[in-house]
Length: 269
Ligand code: KMH
Ligand code: ZN
Image 1 (cartoon, protein in one colour):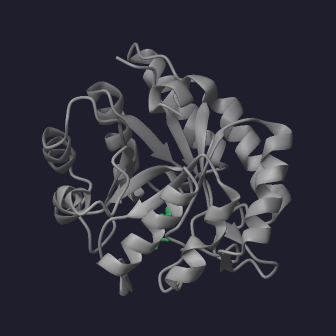
Image 2 (cartoon, rainbow, N blue to C red):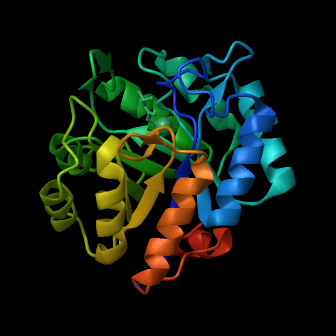
């Protein structure tokens, strides 16, 4: 098996610092959290940023500042979110792509996202995909449900999305597929053997799905974007604490953890 790529999704756009004070939101806090995650074994940083009030933002200036601060401390693959927060207009979601990060996300369909709607029409998917292609960025297709996986060949046939991509199965969002292990097995069963993939388990699904991905030859995403509980009833201390656990588990199970440069190789960057 390839070495394990651990992705740290440290911020997201769905929780506020006032609800969870360990959430990194300022550029310095985000850079420090990234450094700790990389030291613990992460090789990709999935990046959302916040404005001065701590609100989710797609402002390219903030992405630029945070990226520079991270790069001063460590050298992970930096993956920009184009999902933003639920309701962020498509134009803003695309805006940071001109900074040419190594990777960026591309969500593959509209869904209920808790009580809200995460809108990804064909028009939105195409606009984000164009930004990704124009800037020569590796796309990570975000798959929240089976229909989104099944949509890929349709988009490919029309030439709307890049032909080379990494997959991320985000399982457990209310409104998408749940994080039951049988769902992950089904999704992986449907993709090409050589296709690289990550799983991001939401909430209580994070640990079992991470373990399954280690065993199945996939890769793992952890962090506060997806889960803030280290175990039932116990809040996590840091993003790095989650990464440390995955690193430990993977080594116990006989799979080494990829450095950022090894991850670049595995992903063909
Ligand atoms: N915040 C979610 C609505 C992504 O980063 O590309 C979408 C999201 C996906 O976080
Ligand atoms: Zn995200």
